[in-house]
Image (cartoon, rainbow, N blue to C red; front, top):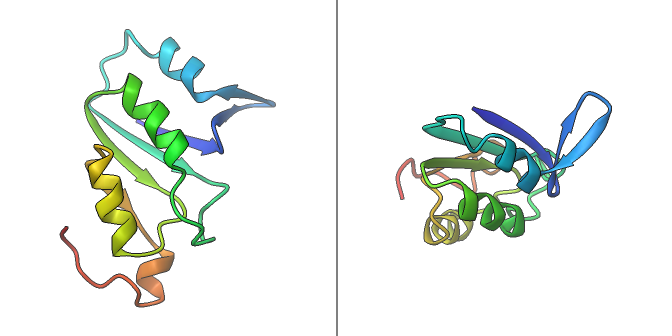
Length: 103
């Protein structure tokens, strides 16, 4: 499953719902992998939204993949320490900042 976030909210049609409420609504759905992308950070290289990731990780305990704002290898290592299982990276790869495929 994938959630496109904007800061700490997920947009549904014309309204934004806080990510905690979305995860609460999904509590009875068996989701094995969750991709959370903070679209407000995609391409910005501002760093990942650690507050959003921490909220998600507290409520979701299976495979978590995140994207948006990842700048460098230090961000990947930090995300791993937060319990993130995988990352979606584009800009830092296209710019040649990140070259390894495993961390």
